[in-house]
Length: 296
Image (cartoon, rainbow, N blue to C red; front, side, top):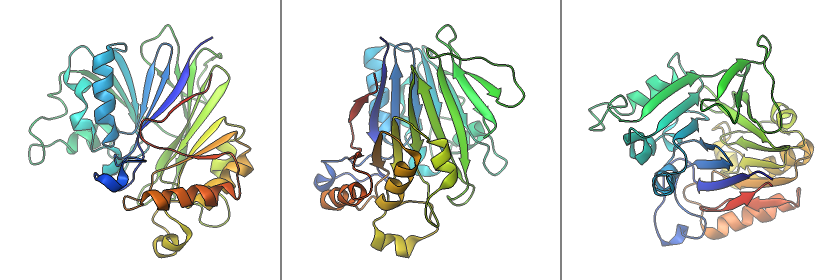
């Protein structure tokens, strides 16, 4: 029958928030895991990736780990230096991300681990690491028989895919300062998930995101601000529950999961965000740490 599961390991934005008042939803920064029968895919390496790394080591199931970055702000990269599989020669880590400010994804991650800030460099990590800069014109296909996902130019490459493959589509969004983000759409066994963190609908809805998310089974969408805080932070590249719900409704997705909460959001603040989203899109849910959702 196959397997297509998602798990949230980190759901906060900006910075991690330990403490009693954040227990219900969690305080780790962004990290999402997708597991299929033959592969594991990770989206972003906020502090949530630290516990995910421990799980992968304990299970010892996957030797090839595929890591996709939406962008390289600290809350999406700060956990990588503590990702245990990266220190083991048993693992191969395939890293994908956009080229920001003329720096490739490997350069950006390496620069975050220089000797002035961390005792071990990127190249000194024992795992085999393979880094690829991707663009909006790319499509990434992971076939069961291949360890390594292959990147194709969707307009100029001859490629084929079927339901058993994992297909990752790329949308470049420019509404997050200062050089935008990547939204990913993951398709497998006839099901689809869209991961849209750090997005903002300036006026009405995000037409590009809506088209990209059309008929997806799950849309995971930024919901950092409520309507009041958004007025003070317009242009910061984040959304309200209302924005997320309107995009979900117009995209005709099956379910919406809110994520990337403001670090100071209390349990009551987050609960209220769900109430606001459900006014527009009834199949709205809240992401929280360790939440697992099966699509099959």
